[in-house]
Length: 456
Ligand code: PMP
Image (cartoon, rainbow, N blue to C red; front, side, top):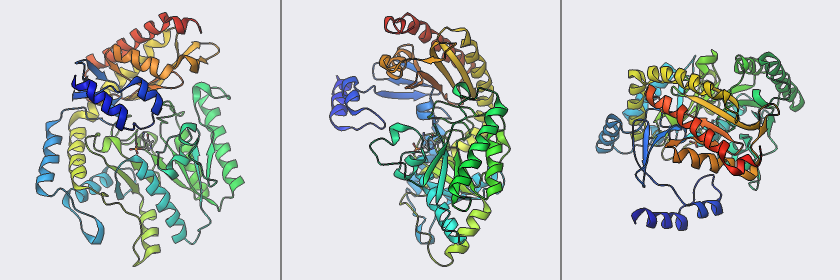
């Protein structure tokens, strides 16, 4: 069988991202063969609702012919143009202008990357350069938030605050610091939003003071922490942190790789908060995953400082595929689709998703439900009062993922026993209801599972 031989080739040759190499050899690959709207099909002919939009990226959904056309037309006309040597092409210029027009405040300058990790890495390089240009090269210390994810390059992985990205890799560096996460459901201070926000502000202030206010370069925030388990900060938390950074002159970076492009409702989640970061990173929904691309947006003062600092010298940061014309042409079409109705549909579907998942709270295994728009999580526990998580020995991640797959649902399944949802914005009401109904079915089956019963 074709898929069998593919599975064997996969086992022998293809290294999968963030996987247990040995675990994957045992489990093998599931091969996806097609996608349409919010559904995907696998090589066994199963049709599934993609409740995770690939990897929180296919925001527009699958099968848009107009996106295929945009890519094909650009490839036919001009498949590649470098941005080096003062060269350029139309699509990336139009895309940069379109993003600048739509981003909050004066985030007017755009640097295109290949994805989110190199966007984060680029911010670290630009920020170091910025402080040199300002005559404060000693501002070389970076702070991020526990449970945060900022990509998988060496420097970005050090800002990431998930042990799996550190252990054995020699990061974080000593210039990378963390403060506690807001994680309302499991915060030792309780779940009062004001108490948690005040504590985070106090902790960041103490951290800046301890490092030295003239040493801190930047602070990184995801408006909603994604890979850490979809952790939604209390209302006002992001703004409070932004204001504190302004007080100390610390650059505030919003990592919108997941939250951008309609995931939470507006085009950018910073708009939910009414804030303007000094720099913003995006990727994923920018091209809806059809081709790779990310972007760093910077405010006027960041751009001007770097520009003046460099003068006639080149700012030595660039990739062969920065501002790739095919990716830019795709992103422009994706943006037109978002504004042509997908953002609006996503807002409606998002409200339905949140309400639907809330209705699962009565289930004995559900400890918490949280989210905003088309981004959500359901956290499982074996004891609601004690908030006891599913123990690692029952391997919640693969167990829950497999069970959902059997029910025709793709979800993210975090190691701690958390379901993550980030469906395409094109979902119909019926598909949202199915996501909720299939999740309930998975929860019921899990409750009957003898290995789970043994730990209840
Ligand atoms: N930042 C955040 C907030 C992310 O969620 C991710 C990816 N999940 C990244 C950065 C890295 O993006 P990429 O995987 O495209 O390199």
